[in-house]
Amino acid sequence: MTEAPPSRPPARLAGVARVVRLRTLPGRIRGLALLAVLAVAAVFTVAALAVQDARDGLKIIGHDAGPQVVATGDLYYALSDMDAQLAAVLLMGREDLGSGRAKALQVYDQRRSEAHRALLQGSNLASGDSAEQQTARSILDALGRYEQLAGQAQQLDQQQPHAAGAPSDQVRKLYRQATDLMKLDVLPKAYNLTLDNGTTVRRTYESKHTAVLDGIAWVVVTGLVLIAILVGLQVYLTRRFRRLINPVLALATLASVVLVAATVGLLASEARHLSKAKNDGFDSVLSLSRARAISNNADADETRYLLDPDQADTYEQVYLDKSQEILSVTAGNLQQYYQQVDARIAAHSGFTGFLGLESQHVTLPGQRAAVDRTLQGYETVQHDDSQLRTLATTAGRRHDAIVLRMGTASRDFAAYDQSLVSLTAIHQKAFKSAIRDGDHGLSGWSVGLPVAAVVIAILVLVGVRPRLSEFR
Image 1 (cartoon, rainbow, N blue to C red):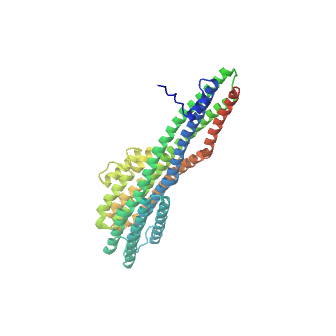
Image 2 (cartoon, rainbow, N blue to C red):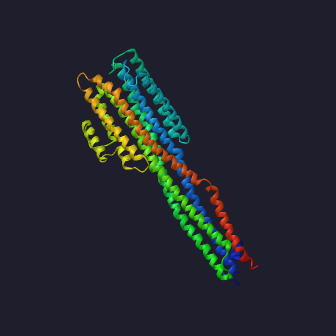
Image 3 (cartoon, rainbow, N blue to C red):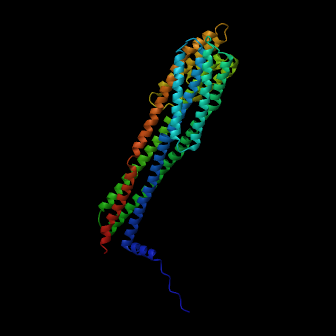
């Protein structure tokens, strides 16, 4: 029985074997060169992936979800201030207190326009998200119903002139319907948009920031492997051919070191930009925007407290709850809250809430002074609130409380609000700067990285070619 002839390897494998032939000197040179080229490809791949992660993170945080959060934060403020201005108009009656009825109506119209613009901007930014677009449409529909009720309340109030104070029962009934629609339907939906986009930003930051840091580690590992192979190839050629150095391979090694170092430096810089944009910019902008909207809503609760005596206890408790969100201290009622606010702000400690978090995270130039101005403004607002409620519950002094509310208290709140705006602007500047610097750092890398990898691979092949030609 004859034995079957030994099977031959596939033609492709045979071709590779003939090219490499590791048992021969040319084969070992080709093998080391091939390993070097593969290592170059590995460095390029992990670097390109990490750079893309950084680019995606900057895009979502700085150009997509991040701006959507700012837009929806502006929307929440505009909506809450619409209701605040409506309450002020109804409280003034026929008297022109504070900035006056005409000014309040002008601000109401301005906030309405801002709300519509913010809704349009948010809808445009969420063009790829049908759920967010549907939420924006439902807010617009509910806002239309609110404006209808607000218009009816204003029209009826003008037909029934009254001194500053509570309007007629019919007007208060319409206003209750309007403000309940705003507080229970419109504002929660607006806040949900902010929460959704805020969650997107946080998840993106966590994943992309981690991916960039992991990318640094992978670039270092693959880069060291590449450099080790190139040095090994250089040493091997030096020993075998008794030449001091192969200049082309030396250039390839130097280029590899530069590429790895530059890539690591870039990724470390991009990680810092992402961190600054998220932690020093976005988080504080979102927090302070929320604080401003809630502060404005609480300020409006002062007006509602005077506008609707039947609901005064409810508005007083709601005011305390909102105040605790802004600056939280241990207090069971408003009198205790006033005392604790004075004590905690004087001590610069012992409080949390939005302003507490801001006070504990001071990292930017000018931030500490801006925080102190904001806290002092907030303390003044609480002093005004204490005086207002004292006047409102003193026989014969209710009108004085209304005058205080529309005059001094309104101006003090405007000063506090402006301090919040200025503080927010510091973080907005940091956010925009981090995103701009991150984008600038990545410019050119989509072309430069593959070109550098190709050049290094070519240098490797050119470097070994003269040695291989000696065996022909």
